[in-house]
Amino acid sequence: MKNFTFFLLAFFFVLNNLYAQDANNSVGFLGETPNSAIVGGTAILDVNINVADSLPANLMIGIIKLDAEGNPGIQPVTMKIIQLSDTVPYAKQVTDTISVPADLALSSTLTDGDKYAYFCTILTAAFSPIDAEYSEVNVVDISVGNNVGFSPSPYDIAMPGSKIALTADLTIADAQAANLMFGVIKRDAEGNPDVQPQIMKIIPLTGDASYCKHLTDTISLPADFALSSTLTEGTKYSYFCTILTAAFSPVDQEYSDVSVVESTNSVSFSPLPNGAASPGDEVLISAGITVADAQPANLMIGIIKLDADGNPDIQPQIMKIIRLTDEAPYCKRVTDTVSIPADFALSSTLSNGDKYAYFCTILTATFSPVDQEYSEVLITVTSVNEYNLNSVGLYPNPVKDIIHLTDYEPNEQVGVYSVAGALILNSVMSSNEIDVSGLNPGVYLLKGKSFVSKFIKQ
Image 1: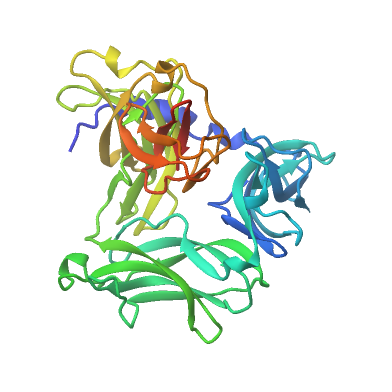
Image 2: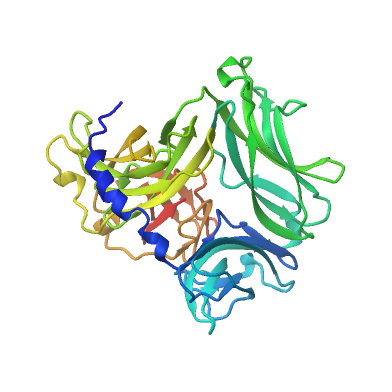
């Protein structure tokens, strides 16, 4: 295990600054929003609100158009206003439903560069906006049917006795889908599931079809659950999410493999962060956490210098602390963003032997380290600066699965590169779409013969 001495000075700084953000009026979607909306249906949105003073008097939720730069239109295409009447200061969660107009244009018919987004905004009594958040959404017709999928994929480690939060996106086109079932099941080497799930939970679906929603619930593994290492050769565990009829016949389902391991307090990158970044970048860092007892209370992520022997500096260059509030034991993945200052020193300017690394660390309530992991990163001048080329419009950015280009030449050869210049993916532009779902989260460059653009993969 690496030396933890660099944390000692950092903790005193953190203790003075950890909760400074609590004094803001802010709003944001709770977890993720549904990734689709069905014309003529509804969408169920979950919003988190923090109100520090009497300014916010209303919450507005709805759907709006964004242009290629992410700027919202003046007029939402659909909206609902909810009065806020709590006594300040307060924090609360609001769940409400918006109606999607039956004549709303599908996302596939929008002008190049335009896209839809769900939005949530807090407003004064005079309806002046204070804070807002947008989440891109694909507007589809009822032909998409009833379907379900994990969003995001669950953390692929679990422990006997632990609780696991599973999150799914539901698109319900008709009244056939009446229940959602979460759980763990065994699958053989060909991917065929057992007849009987090892553990499951059934959640009634109460929305009136058609609708879209994002649903999170928790399953518990028994304390005597068999470890993956003890399974018959070729057999593995998988999480599953399934929508069922009222008679419990399956309509649609998805699997996600999971390894059941011995109980421990541990943290690791999940997946590894991109190995290169540039000053000014926003970097997504995802950590998988297993918590066997009440000891870990915080997660710290960031960037630090390591010497030639892998020993860390006393002071992290960049860090962020995230409180862990779940009840042990549990397993989860946490994703957050760290910002690299525009004047951050490049890796090439470090002393001989020194290097940068991302780190993720779980800490006690008194900020003593419990476990940590490092992943080296090169801080370089972005390769975009090496080319005197035009940028091309692309959306969404950040992206989960599919990038759309607003301008391209048919059959043009384009490449996806790391910011260090390594070719990751080649594609021929037969349409304006590029599938980047297989990339790890991080910053990438998209290069054609006449353009270079940067994008962030979530």
